[in-house]
Length: 194
Image 1 (cartoon, rainbow, N blue to C red):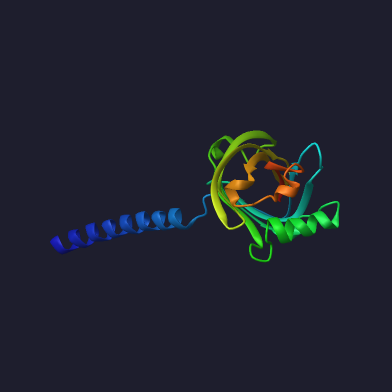
Image 2: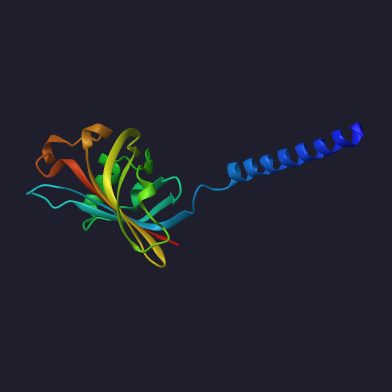
């Protein structure tokens, strides 16, 4: 009788442990949210002055966004930036960005207020992004406001921020210092497929 009672309690305890363990395993290995991806994002910048209009576009931006955690990452091929004049593009890659030595720029960060975004409901949501921007082999912390627009077929993220060239060891020769701004406005416009 005692053995039957022990065996019954043992089975009950084992059953509870199995349920708890399975719940923990499911929780630990289930993704925190849907991951959105793109390889055709758009980043452009403006670095001109009143003497020179300097801007470039890059439509080969790879990015991912985790809708549950807010983690996001960007990778940009520096040589993917297109200028309106070939000479500008050549100087950008060879003299300023040293694209052969530093072929990619990256950002890895987080949307701090991701819980304010409902990925199941169409609308535009204001967010704040912070993380580490790596340009020209130098990594710096950056923060910027942005918007996320959710629609039936996409999640669209936009942001704009300014960086100082000296922070990334990008030197401007004195002969052109009046034509190139010491700060650069960077614009991000990325559409992730749902």
